[in-house]
Amino acid sequence: MPAVNKQVHIAAPIEKVWAALAERRNLEDWMGKDSVAELDFKVGGRYAVFGGGTTGKFTAIEKPHTLGYAWRQSEWPGSWADSVVSWALKAKEGGTDVTLTHDQFPSQEERDGHDAGWGGYWLGPMKDWLEKQS
Image (cartoon, rainbow, N blue to C red; front, side, top):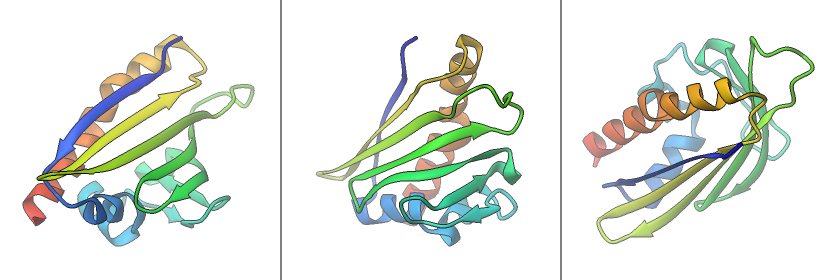
């Protein structure tokens, strides 16, 4: 099944976009204070967001351009493998181009739900918060 691919331009410098993805204080500001349960920001480090409903491990961290992690929903059966999320950030005049790829879903239903959810629960709120900060 195809990956979820999202692209957005954020009118904020790449360093601020990176910080919105990588720093607990910033994640809590735009996601909500109770959303970030755990954040051990290093390759192999664990994270838990959305009150622990989504968990995983960081697989790639190349500041400020590339971020990757395993993604698992708490309600997924143990037999389902983690899916894979990757971010690519590119400085562009007037801000940052952000590309999100979410792949290796365990089912079409999960893929379709995440396709809809990335905009409403992550990219939209993050973009709004960053552009108000700039």
